[in-house]
Amino acid sequence: MTPILQIQNLTTSFKTELGFVRAVNDISFNIEKGEITGLVGESGSGKSVTSFSIMRLLPRHNSRIDEGKIIFGDTDLLSIPEKEMVGIRGKEISMIFQEPMTSLNPVFTIGDQIGEVFRNHTTLDKKAINARTIELLDRVGIPRAKEIVNDYPHQLSGGMRQRVMIAMAIALKPKILIADEPTTALDVTIQAQILELIRGLAKEDDMAVLFISHNLGVIAELCQKVIVMYSGQFVEMADTAGIFKNPQHPYTKNLLDCIPRIGMGNRKLNYIEGTVPHPADKLIGCRFQPRCYAAQEKCAKMKPELIEVREGHYCRCFHENKE
Image 1 (cartoon, rainbow, N blue to C red):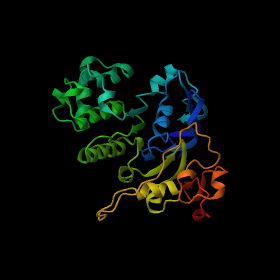
Image 2 (cartoon, one colour):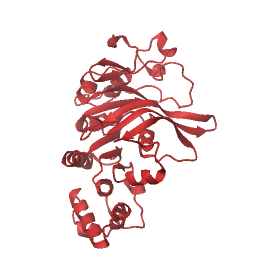
Image 3 (cartoon, rainbow, N blue to C red):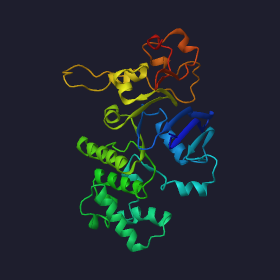
Image 4 (cartoon, rainbow, N blue to C red):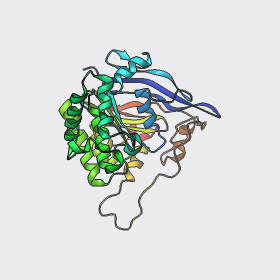
């Protein structure tokens, strides 16, 4: 079966005082219909840049896509004019952004902002748009939808605002939903509700989801497939069981070791020493090598390729446990 979205050798750069530097470097992956794919990694790994590249929402004055293809159906989204992309963005491919308070306009009501999706992509009249908006608010679990539709964002809690963002994203039943850290800053109870909502919507509408997070617990709960990203590159890809039960890359193992566990007592949490390198840093070999517990001499001199270590499980590492 042909994937609903194919990203092929995508490379995205940003203009800096040092010239253009690569924030996303030669990544390839597929998104399958009805499947929830998790993209995980530390801040600065390139997760959000990947999502904004797919949506073609990068700032034009200081960024560019150097190479690659983003194939949706039979169309390369990088080859079509912006006017055509506007027709796809929000209708065929939608996105939930990280912070709902800054994503929602404070001077427009909830109804006005959800209704904009219908005004831009349909010929529905005002009455029909209002009815559809109330239906959407009901669907995402917002109580008193008929009253909430006239409220402003500041009148809602963080969890309610995130539900509004989800309602906007699914208004036209997109084929693909990109969720960029949609549960950040929410308490665990509301977080669980949002995750259950996204899972239910994906199943009901047979919608593909790219779920971006730094929280491995959330990824384990929600996703069928996981991609681990580090410094603009994919370092490991597999189904969720493969990543959590048999991780191959030292970075993935380090991330899993940092998860708090019941029964730890007073033991200190594990952490990964150092930070993600800046995209402009000139590293000849593996970009994780300066922080890696399993680094070998060749890791500093050669770039490992992403290879299939077992069926459907890919890893970018020289470590001997893959041999």
